[in-house]
Every structure is written in C-alpha cells, then in structure tokens.
Length: 274
Image (cartoon, rainbow, N blue to C red):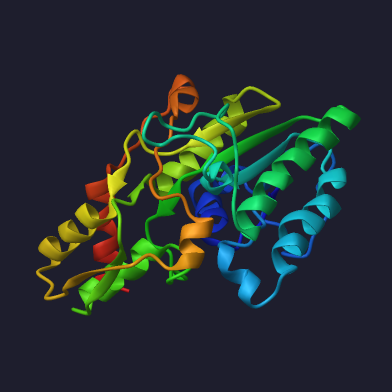
C-alpha cells in the first residue's frame, strides 16, 4: 500500500513495481488488512516556513499519526538525508545510520521527529517498521524548482542557455537516479532488517560545480556560472557538504545501475524531449 504514490518517487515506484503496488487515494488513512505500507507523504523543502509555519507539522507529523495506527503490516517510512543536518563531521567521515542527527529547518526537523514517533509508537504497540533515508533523488522530476530538486532546475536553465548561480562553497552532494532509488526501496522493504534504518544513496558524492560544468559541456550550452554568496537562511538549514555511507544497503546486495554521468545524460535527454 503506497501512501504518497502520486509524487515523483512514489509514482516511479508504482511504475517500476506495478505487481506489488497499490496506490492509495491521497486522503486515505486505512490500509488493507495484513498489508505492509510504503509511506512517502511529505513536504519537500525547508522554505514552507515563509508561507506557513504549520504545514510541515501538519503534513509530516499529524498526517503520519493518522495513518500509522491503521497499518497492520510493516510500516516502511521514506525519510531524508536532511535529518543529519550538522550532526556529523563531513570533513572526517560519511554519515552512517548511527550518526548523530542535528537537523535545522522545519522540514528537516519534522522528518527526524517523524522517525522518532514511528520508533516510539511501534515499540509501544509491538509493530514493525523500517526507515529509509534518501539522498538527493534525480531522474526526471517534472516539478523540480529552486526549492525542490534544484539540480534538475539548473539543468533546465543550462539547456535553455540561461546563466546560473551557484552558492559559494564546494557543496558536495549525494545523488541517485530515481529508478535506482525505487529498486533500493523495494530491496529494503523485502530484505531489510526490521525496526532499523537504512541510508539509500550513491557510493560517491560529487561537487555541484563539477556536475554543472559537465552538463554545460555535454549540451554545448552558452550558460555562464556565477558564484554567489550563500543566503543566510540557506546557511541555517542546509549542510555545506554531504557524504553518505550506504554499506548497510550494499550489504543487502544493492548496486546502482546508473552512475551520476549516465543519470545526467538521461535527464538532459528528458529535458530536451519533453
């Protein structure tokens, strides 16, 4: 039972695994008796606070707790790398599932709180869960913008020969093609240890400026790169660099089908052939 099956990741999961996916109506709170759930209902960025200071709470926490008691099977929860925040030292190591979490921003904080609520509720009522923390998921997000999936938004501007701005700093990020993410989610949901957390990401992180330069070269774009000062709010809520340890996922036998450059080529093709 997929909650949030009309979004970028949930929709792709249903396409990749139609034989095992039942996408629920977006307002549904009940699961078919005995069935496991894949829960993806969520806001997508930290900028909602400028429009509403409660939307992240209502969507990521209140909605979650309306659904959780109605799922009799295992509750597979899709979380985010944002929960790590500045809780680990990226200069020293990659974030493991056991790394300390210190999220900033309402989206990040509510995602981490959601994890803790699930753990507490399931421990209390003897239910099973899995938590999956995703890296940056790319590969044809039609709703990409400055606040959500910014890389694909930047790629669109490059294809249109528009100049782009990149925030000052190295900005290492971990990216994975959405099809690989769906395969990883399915693998964890089938074989992952119960009542634990898995990182889902690529084996490597990459500098944003290197990715951008690749796209410019690949497309022959006339776009110019402008390095700008990082806005104050972005400094508050975003980790400068992020590296993800995915040894637990690979211990289940996962290997990514698309490296970053193949993924970028696919995005370029999709953007040029809508």
